[in-house]
Image (cartoon, rainbow, N blue to C red; front, side, top):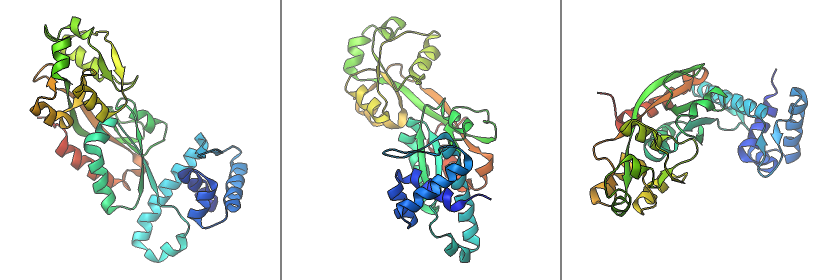
Length: 301
């Protein structure tokens, strides 16, 4: 039998970042929290918490915290049907849903979907951000229950639902275009003009080049891990880059930005993958994500 008071103590330490804050959440003393976690570590035979500021979960501790999140979801569903049992659950943490998404989705359409879900649901959200080609790895490692990803093939143990495509356009300031593309947007010019790249995983700019010129072009780049920073950097003439249409539409209409190749958008298909073990309990979240995506993203004709 699992020691759920100890598991709740572990989850509280990881969620709050300290034994003292966990004690306040659980309404017990810090020494009681420490004792419960230590006894749990002795029972499983491994360290579960990396002590520090803040405290962090080890890999095994992370697995136990995710188990408690799923238990919390089950209890929320149970107490909705049997509210008399809720009083026996004092000291429990609100369940937290670990999710993963790419930065551009988070900066455009994903937050409204989460806000709609949160208006009618109790769980808290723990959102990890990674490249859309890599968020599926979070599912494979069991670190999240659901993710927005570019991977259509379901991760083992997951269900995959198409969301539509996030549409990008390659943009730069008029002054940048006059300086670097006076003779047109050519492979030679792209090889000299500085681009913007989100991080070492970002392949958007390279993908756009290959799609439009049929070849890979080595090009200089600035590294800028910010969705809004991409827009601002393009507008200020720092470099050229792929931006979601919804974030640059006003700048394009006002002439503050121009498309490098007008009428040549670059679409990135996205999918919602959710763990089968939690899929039924995450139905309201899935509905909010899918409904919002199908309004905001480009849908196949």
